[in-house]
Image (cartoon, rainbow, N blue to C red; front, side, top):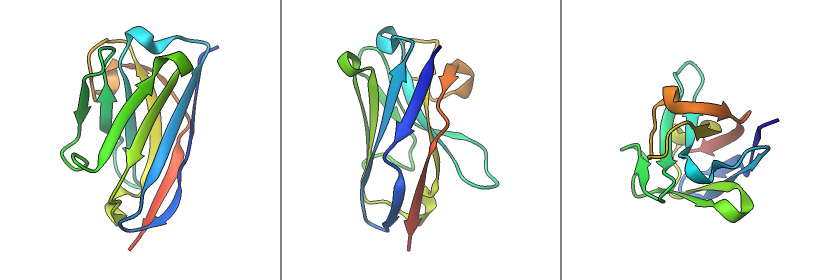
Length: 123
């Protein structure tokens, strides 16, 4: 059974940092893209960052220069470093494993999802 479990969310002040971790089990994502998505109340889920099997990363414009995605295939883990957080970054953050090898932030390219971890940024 494939499981993706996110951790590392929390409440921080604006300008603070968090590091999210996604641990994958029951599946080896080494040949596939993995990504982070977020969904704020009343809004659609959006792709924040994705990393392809070759390590190439793609970011939403709103997080470029502030967030960094990385992966450790030996540990079946995906990470998202969130720096210089803003109140508008407040959302549930989800980890996903894609069906494609290239970095993609399109939800339709994803096969597996975690349950999310909450990030709340106070002004």
